[in-house]
Amino acid sequence: MKFCFFALGCKVNRFESEALAQLAQARGHEIVQHDADVCIINSCTVTASSDHKNIRAIHKLRRENPQAILAVCGCMAQMEPDKLRETGEVDVICGTADRAAVLDLCERRALGEPEEDTARFRVQPREFEPLPPGVPLGRTRALLKVQDGCDNYCTYCIIPYARGHIRSLPVQTAVQQAEQLARDGVHEIVLTGIEISSYGRDLGGDTDLVTLIAAACRAVPQVRVRLSSLEPRTPDARFCEVLSGISNLMPHFHLSLQSGCDSVLRRMKRRYTTAQFLENVEHLRAAFPDCSITTDLITGFPGETEAEFEQTLDFVRACRFADMHVFPYSPRPGTIAAGLPGQLSSACKQARANAVKEIAAELRQQYLEGFVGRRLTVLWEHVDKQGLWCGHAPYHFIVKTADTRCRKNEYRDAEIISVQGESLCARLIDDQGDHIEGC
Image 1 (tube, rainbow, N blue to C red):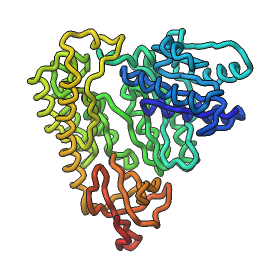
Image 2 (spheres, rainbow, N blue to C red; image 1 turned 90 degrees about the horizontal axis):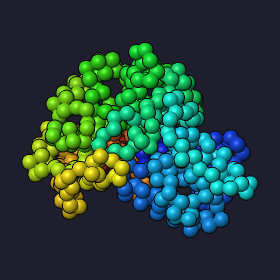
Image 3 (tube, rainbow, N blue to C red; image 1 turned 45 degrees about the vertical axis):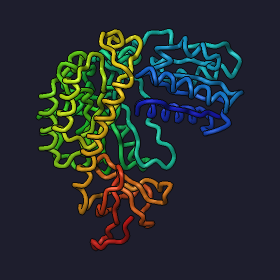
């Protein structure tokens, strides 16, 4: 059969969809973008608006593939199966307890067996579900899922209920998968999970995220290793001391702040203070000079006063983030925060988000301007709609050049000559250090 996969939400969903595509191919199925016999949506449910996006995707895929078997797996399937059934367009519902089961259910459905779903089962796995790291043809970078689940139970978040308790991929298995990705020609691996800072707590002994990062970097010294989002308590003095000398660990650290006010953080049930956050930011900057520190921030959390919001603005300026993802608070039914007093208007939440975004843009511009005139090694990846080659420097941002001598999946040194929006413009440098061409 012809299968198509559609991932919504986080990097973990993208990894899982790529892994499912690889498993489907191993069973003899064809992976397509259009005219599919089976469409599988890996859903997100982090906010109420995420659920709306899932429903829109269902309607779109059903219109485009009217005769196909349409399956929904993932977090919304686990938490809101009845909403999916109410659409009248979903044939198979599969939760998060056994990802590979969605293929079995679709194959049985194709044979005429009755509708079946696994979302009615509570997420109770205590061991990590192994999935192959899927690498789409031509991809220069790959995701490697090393952890699942979350035990933090922040008051605004439903994910611990959708994903269950923390589970970790054993270090040896993670290293083997990284080595396989390197053999497949991948030049950059992103270690990802639902809450990778909790990595190893279920494995026993002294195994933790630092152990994993060091082992993965040693195993594939020719490959860049990058980290997905970290809990702000993670990059402490030990983290920085152990990892600072590893040359293939990329100096980009995404720390999810959520609020720059301690009283709001307590209502969110975040497990750190702004002082602890700033201390770890300073640890990172001392250990990884010029590192990219990026963050997420929620504006208009229930009860957030104007004074609390002003504290957040001041703290954002103090942290000097390289980039920020800013979201107005969206109440998620089933969470504690959705029932808290002091719910703010949509207009207020959006206005505060806009104010933070203005500061974020200024900080990003300042950070990027610091690279003008510098020489960076770029992994070139693709040509954009303007005909410019695009690639990743060790930091978080995209570098672009008009030089046509770039090659996909190739490292090439470049001198940064200007800032263009959220990207950097560069000209290549040949082996003798001469400039070749700019943007």
